[in-house]
Length: 313
Ligand code: CP
View 1: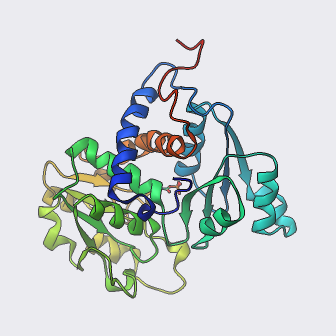
View 2: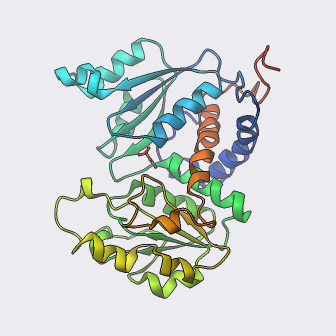
View 3: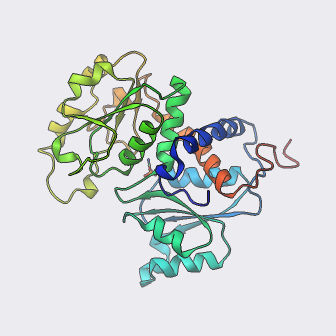
């Protein structure tokens, strides 16, 4: 595989392969010196046209733990501000000698465009409302690490599905691994068409919460809303928020997940984010090992998978 643009590029077997490799990189990440020489001599560039904390830092950490060189592109201090086009920017960076581009952009489809312009591997770190494949991989890994297997689990994805690339990638990944996926949202926050989505739909969280294995809260993406889709955030929380009352209705063995960043007091209350069933911090930690696995799959030669660099033993 040369690029990772969507979950569908991987299919169920590819997702399982990433998770098996991730087990090795979780072990590496737990070492006193969490570094292996697998990508020595490779260069990975982060090309983020949209803000990010988790994904950008996690990819950069993953690349460093694999001994790759990293380059960080900051739009705010780049020649994009002088009008340089996306294509010219990408081709300029590639001319410096790179092996992979990790790209986030507000427009759906940009990673596919970049893949058609460069010889480097392209990894989609989030394009518009469309896809966020490494988020789905780290979510699958986190559920697998707590539940063993996703097959037969009942997973509810709650909230702003319409604007969510995380929801689109998670639906594909969870369904591919055999989970039953339920979308829970007001009609205004669902996509206009759900044709072909392997999901069930409900507008009532209270009707389903007691039967869930996993509740996955989505961030309300106010920055992507061009019209009033909600009466108010207070009313949204009252009907769809994971409040202390709803937490009591959730099974003792259920998992609480959120991709971050959280709007505390809107889709998730502080009690829920900090509850013992919350795996939100584990999602972030697993993200580094998952991204190591993805970089290794795309750029690795197959040798030196987990041996420490000479001198680090
Ligand atoms: N989950 C996620 O993509 O977070 P960031 O926007 O901080 O990268």
